[in-house]
Image (cartoon, rainbow, N blue to C red; front, side):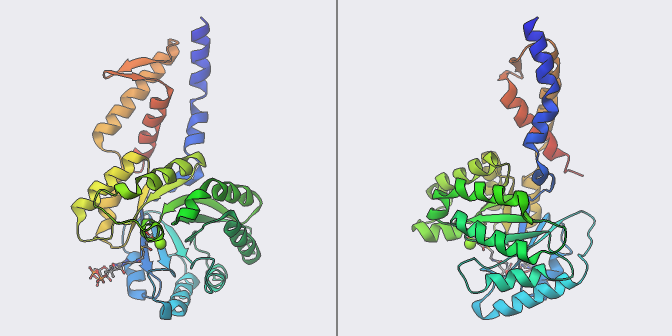
Length: 323
Ligand SMILES: CC(C)(COP(=O)(O)OP(=O)(O)OC[C@H]1O[C@@H](n2cnc3c(N)ncnc32)[C@H](O)[C@@H]1OP(=O)(O)O)[C@@H](O)C(=O)NCCC(=O)NCCSC(=O)C[C@](C)(O)C(=O)O
Ligand SMILES: [Mg+2]
């Protein structure tokens, strides 16, 4: 009897779980986050023709030092025009230069005072909570409209990993009253390797701890986790394997540098038919067993309880992006 009552209570709380797991940030898919050098109008125009979840017009490392001003002004010209419409919705962002450079304030001012705000600002090389405070103060001064933009935080150094929890907590706290909403953490693996002096290998074991720590922390703060760049952009087979590895670890998307990588990544970050059928079957079975007051049960030979149910919910939610 008691177990039946408990079962009903748990069943009622399923939507609550859904809300917790799929916060607003999860509703905007960021499977592929594609960099487009901000000083190259041809590539920017090309990006608007691609079916890509997320475009990052770059002022940072994809742009030569002597082209920083060109990148800023080219991006500004694009933001003066309405956001180009595509058949599917997409996120248009600007990656500014890091906050320890002479460029970042002008980058931010230039894109946030344009006729149309970008959806997202991507901030590289965040290392401390103080950097988030600096960003927050600046953005609150610049955005006059009653609007918030998304913030994507880059974690790319040993110091950043040591401070990761405090960085996320500060971003979350300051966003409550501020003009931004933190939505994702990005693993900047190339800068990270340079920072710690790691030598790259094909299976990336040398950065496994950091790669896992980023997912773990992102999920603790209900943020998306965006995996490392695969720089051998002509090798699509290895890219696919690295995507699948990242997805199994809990990453929700991956950074991309070339158009040919986009479909591979976006496909890889969707569940396949077998996974969807498994998840739907499990959720049906879960509901039936809850009504009967059984918290744990067997499905396709495995013990299922609430955590596995939540994983199945993740899969079904992602599958809805398949159109
Ligand atoms: C590798 C490159 C030079 C080869 O560029 P290409 O023009 O030689 O290549 P292609 O194969 O000839 O290009 C085919 C077509 O695609 C276009 N195209 C090609 N790439 C892009 C692009 N990104 N966006 C939009 N369009 C693109 C290109 O313009 C051409 O268009 P067309 O057929 O109409 O003539 C080029 O792909 C590129 O510039 N990619 C972006 C590089 C970049 O932004 N790097 C920095 C990001 S990674 C990073 O920062 C690290 C991180 C996170 O911080 C950390 O781990 O620490
Ligand atoms: Mg970087």
